[in-house]
Length: 306
Image (cartoon, rainbow, N blue to C red; front, side, top):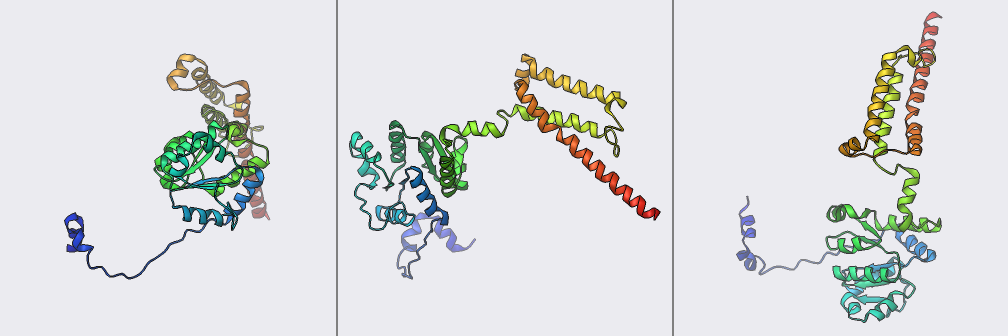
């Protein structure tokens, strides 16, 4: 370990280390907005979605960024559009809601975590559906309170945990806007939309796996012949094994005591239709592969004969 490192570990040495410094220069870093953000802000405005920016940055920086992403136009008067967090919270509740109800975007700068939470709460009290994005350790309270919570980045998702969704600001705005154009209320209908294209419960997947394994066992009757030439009843032991396996599976599904022990629920007839629909292609795929294999071997045999 270098001797200077030991000095840095002792706070007593800080005044000496920080004395007689030589000014070399200033380095500035600028994080440019993503290219699609401008279009997304415009699309939100056209769709009637109000965009609010709540940030810990100082007022001048926050306003400059909002102009850059076209939340505000150049030269626009921000007298009733830009507020410091404490300044806004010092207003009466009636005036706060009156300001929030005005059309157009707004920015709240030097905002504390509680300010974010209070603004989300006020918007919900006004009957608004609120989507909140955040990437820091101080965002979870507001994210949890919002109708839609979106954690951004690895750090944000690790801190915020399991009670919010995950997306980036740009992608989220575009996603929400497209949903609005389609007439889909993603804030309320997201789960319903998901159920239209997937299973409603993880228990369905268990039955799919069982059914796939059972159907796949039919493929093992013959490496080359199809199920017409080698029908399942030619191997009664296989049919017996399949019957016992399905029987045990049904027993676990439909006997309440066993269902509680294994932590599963029974499936409806409609769900069984879906299980069969998803599982049977394994037989069709294998039959096609067998056909291709037979054709290839027949061609090879013909070439050797010639």
